[in-house]
Structures are given as structure tokens and as C-alpha cells.
Length: 121
Image (cartoon, rainbow, N blue to C red; front, top):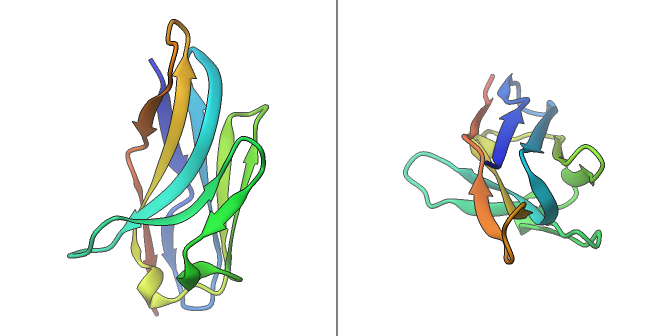
């Protein structure tokens, strides 16, 4: 059983910073892409940042220059460093990973439970 567990959300003032973490656990053979999504109230879930196993990264335009995605493959963990936060960054942030577990030939998609980020004064 593969699980993704997020942490690091909370309440922060505009201009502040937060660091989200997402740790994968279970009988894992390989992790491909790890991605952060977010969903604000009344809006569709959107991709925020992704990181491939080869080290390539991708960001939605609205967070470029402010957010940084990184991963520690040994710890099976992906991070999202969020700086210069704005009220419009308020959302539930979800971690996603494409994982090949023990006994599997091809990977499956896994999601974390989500962590709330609120940017407000």
C-alpha cells in the first residue's frame, strides 16, 4: 500500500513563506513524476509545480519566481517552497505521484490527503 502524506500548510500573512512536504511510503519500486496541485474554493484543481524523476521541473505561470519544487529521492519526499505568498495562493494543496509499487508492472497514480494553505492578514 502506497501512501502520500503532506505537511507544512497553515496560515501566513501576505508576503510570507511556507514549505510544504510530501513523503511517499510503502512498498515502492520507483517514483516517477511528483507534482503539487491546488484547489481553491469554487475553482478547479490546477497544477502548481511538477518534478520528474530526471530532475525536470515545471510551474504554472502564476507561481514562477516565487515557488520552488524540489525532491529528495532517497527520502521519497517532494517539497514546495512558497515565497512571497499572495491571498490568491489560498487553497488546499495536494501532492500527486506516479508510483510503481512492488508487484506492479506499470505505475499507478497516488494522491495525498491535502493540506490547507491560507494567505491572509
